[in-house]
Image (cartoon, rainbow, N blue to C red; front, top):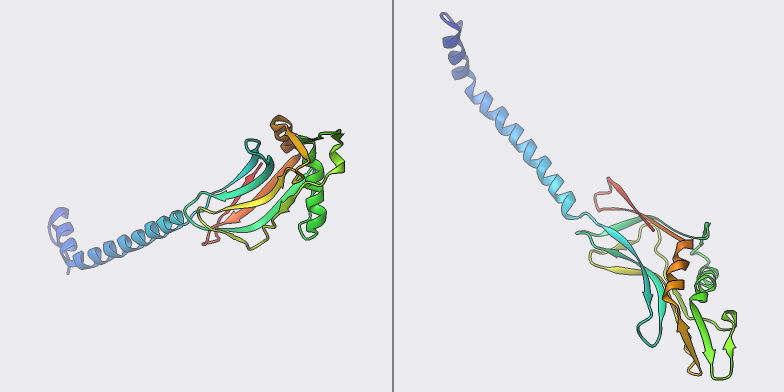
Length: 194
């Protein structure tokens, strides 16, 4: 139908004829916007946040040095890549014995071993070392803390050790840890380093 008269009358006439289409298009745009906002909210509600913590505990009878990774985010983290470098050299966790001995060798200078008879050189005693492998595809649950390694003081009752937390802290300067991870949606990769 053709409009006869001033432009304002024609505009009202066109609006009256197309109001159903305008409402339908507006409803569709609102539905798409709501879907976008809901998806964005869902991604945020499962976003992981990994933090790397050097652990130095000299307060109890058995001092220890270690490192852990904690997920302080809202959802689980899927590990894409995990690397540890000691003095620039990447440690190979497929050869776990070699890796634990390298960690022990590096951190043992924070401990001084003393017996009633004489002082032990640091390389004469074995320190208990626990290493944990965090591999590709591993999941770290929300609120969970995973140990990377832990070095405990000597178990021998005849030997007491004096622990130097300052030296232990200095030894972390040679250690690089990098973890790349993603959320369940897998569309964004996050990196945490020390």
